[in-house]
Length: 326
Image (cartoon, rainbow, N blue to C red; front, side, top):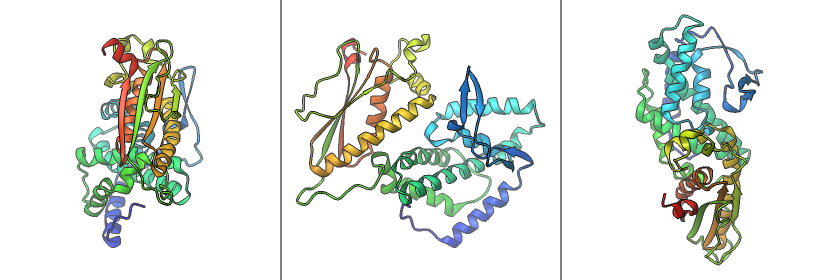
């Protein structure tokens, strides 16, 4: 998928060691096997679970690892730990639980789940040519990066670990955050030009849609008012979409991830085509009610996403925050 060289025999030996280690964990429990955010439905504030057709016996660690390291959920590490602690507290009331034994195997199952996700995203995206699957690859790589920096496995996997490090350095994979499908060759006589993407946040009720001063026209205006509003919650009223608590709150909302994935599909396609055709400017604006939380968060996320794209310059302005000196 990323053109990374490796020794097939050495990698097979790592997988054999990993498999033997995983099988030393107790595995006589019901295993959901597809425990991810999109299979958890809320009704009247209560969770319901769907899609059990792959259920079988297995280890307890796998399901909770699947949920907490669901790539598109992109949960912050502190929240992951909080949810894992809560899971273990509840689990201890249902079955005899040795926490240290559970954690001895836990991160190995996390790695398995992340690898499974990467394999699925790569196959469906690169080979089946379904670009929206590639949008999850950067999130899975982010999980790999965190694991490599924060977790030491109790089993030696030198070849696999080196493959992960090579993946993190792969330009092809790093640029997936700015390209959901292979870039088309430039038109005859035209080279890919530097493109400036101007990203704005604004309030629909205070000033309205920003004007395009580049003269290019076009671009996108996205309405974020359909998303959960942090401004209605007391703890967020004096914060903005640039503040970590607001970002973490929005990161936990499935509707936000779906919305942003649709935004990326549109913007990434235009960025690729604009560069190929030699356009110099593209404008993307996000609006919400007050221009303080949702629109600011979305603008910041898009800017972060685009800055990873080679040849793209990003300018961000938060119109309402500028007016209020925030």
